[in-house]
Image (cartoon, rainbow, N blue to C red):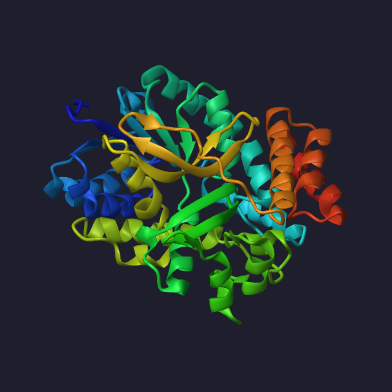
Length: 401
């Protein structure tokens, strides 16, 4: 495989057809950054070529070069930026995680709850292998991690030597935009602050012209909600939580099913569409929410090319030993530390609880045994104490297989 001369981006897990949405986002924002060389890496060679042809067509007019290879080491060699997005275990693994949660009567989420813990335990060996290759082939690259559960996989990657690994999530910015829309304000002019953990965070300041408008959001909502978050919750917290707060505070309908089967059907349909017409965005792409590409991944890539710092949302390992989510300055000099943000009094117990759970979950993934898994489940706000024993048994049974 010939090597591009441009600044190189490598996408690990690039054979998924959802990578088409990354290509679309890059093309739409290409005028704001210099052309790059993009290399897609994936294990499914036919799918990789299918996706690669579309991505090449999409970015050709912007001056980008696009290549693809199933050789992970070759794809990573010399990369400046790595987008890490494999679904280790595939949709079959996600289905197992959803089934576990549903058997315990809990939300089948891939980022929170017992399904997320089982996923983190299952992917350890493959994730460690990827980290070794990154460390050997591009130790100085910034690694933008999208693999869930995001905070745990990011922490493990950093602890495995990928010191420039940052977790990426669009939800803080998307939540801010929706709050701005409630107020009729321009989100680009907002002065805002955010703190917490991935999918467990809070906008703690949202100001225009020097005035914090969080309580105005609650008043404007009335009987409506912001992504399912009620006005009374925002007023009581003095902060705006992300939509996953519905799961964490028990304000959610009983779970009825997961998304693994839907995503697998959609994946196959997208591949068929890309093979029939590699010159146009596949029609079915709009059936899945993919805002993390235009709202988080591409803005980070753009900022890493710019001498002027931008304040963007990232997940990074902090001195508390866990990966936390917040805003940080990003420029061609790199990604800085999280900007400190003081949470309101009503938010602090939630963050303390999330931190305690995250530490327990990391300990369980690093030293899996019955005791550490039970501790992690007990600390999980999503798991009622009555379900801990059953969840632990099912997870341990899976580890033994």
